[in-house]
Length: 224
Image (cartoon, rainbow, N blue to C red; front, side):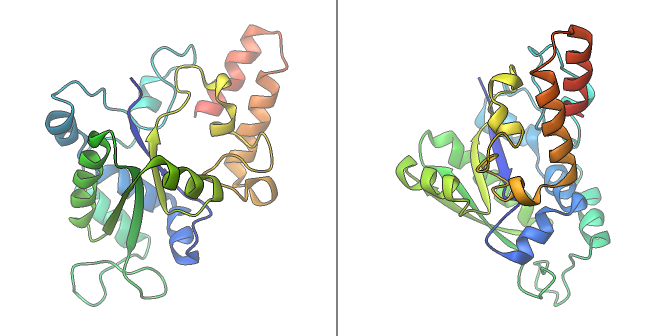
């Protein structure tokens, strides 16, 4: 079963939040602040296979190192990363501030059913609160969630991890395959992050070669 995944919007409506999400240290901090072991025991009865956003063990391009990158629970490291990135609690109220001085607050959109989605995000929100970031949970029905996803009108969108076992079957989630994807970077076709543009070029090469060695090389680079 594909696990709960938090998709950060690289083109978030708030310019300040967009800048934060595009900062590597912030993304690392959010990941290290998430206690996946606690989620595993409380929500999934110890059965969750902990990972980050990478290709799954079933994929021929799998890497254990990539699969578990940034997944260690380390709130001390998370706090240090945020401090170094300039996101600090300047007024001492327990919440960090964005670069314009407003509170570092994030809206997380998730489906209200199945209920484990909300359970997971409630735990994540508490984990992030402990490092000075406020998360508001927007638990809604699909007919509200999906248009927000399609329109790019979200901060963080919660869905399953799409395409990890066969990434070439879900290229729209991993690459710029048309002007409207991936959904978490709607502006990518005209203003892509360099790493995403490179990954897209590699995927295009992977889908047009008949050389299995080159295919593996291209997809390994995409993964990393």
